[in-house]
Length: 316
Ligand SMILES: [Zn+2]
Image (tube, rainbow, N blue to C red; front, side, top):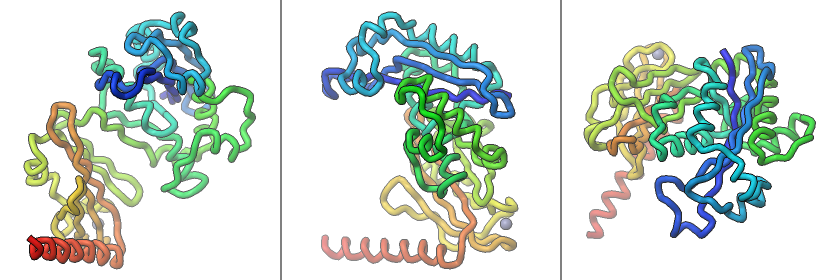
């Protein structure tokens, strides 16, 4: 198994948002990647420039940050040639790793724009090295810049930041300092492509929480009426946990609930609804072990909401 740590650079419309192509706000112009073997040792590198087709002139910020010129990009390959070459270099067993989550989104958005999304199967399990860095060295919520992490670990800085290959190499070096136990237990799931059928739905169990990613439903109401979506299985033992507080919405795209496992006590659930590729709605449900006070806080949130709604009704 190989870890493919990659980084992309992209360009945007040089003439402002009004003239941008809505389906492709960011056009990939460079791919850089390193391959690490299962012992996290770098064994190979990949780099290519891409000749852009949509925004042929560089946005001044891209030119400033990445340090490439429009002339440089003319030497690049067409996007399709470049990604086919990249995937074939990566190999079929690749575990993709990136700093943050946006590179995977933009890669798939560019693939989709060119009708090539079939080259990359999703939903994709990957390693978010930015998150792993936080778990290993700081706290689970912090998200640092790549340069911060390089300075923090006192890694030698001999290359330019914001060039795809240099950033991929830095990310690879950071990944190689992370405990194998953290790497194994803290993978992420990219849902640019949501599951397309019930059989492909994702049920993942992590230390202290579980994640369910559904297929798409025509509407949010239909999604929230589904038995599997509404279910609350304990994230530790898998037993059905009895609801204390049924799913309720706070008016955004999130729903909450609490339940009690006969063995592990309180658990809390959160459902986020998202737009699916086919125009429908899919959900991401997280179930976490909870503490009495937390469940209490969720109960209070619901109470506060009820009071607010009652007041709003009185005003009408
Ligand atoms: Zn349990």
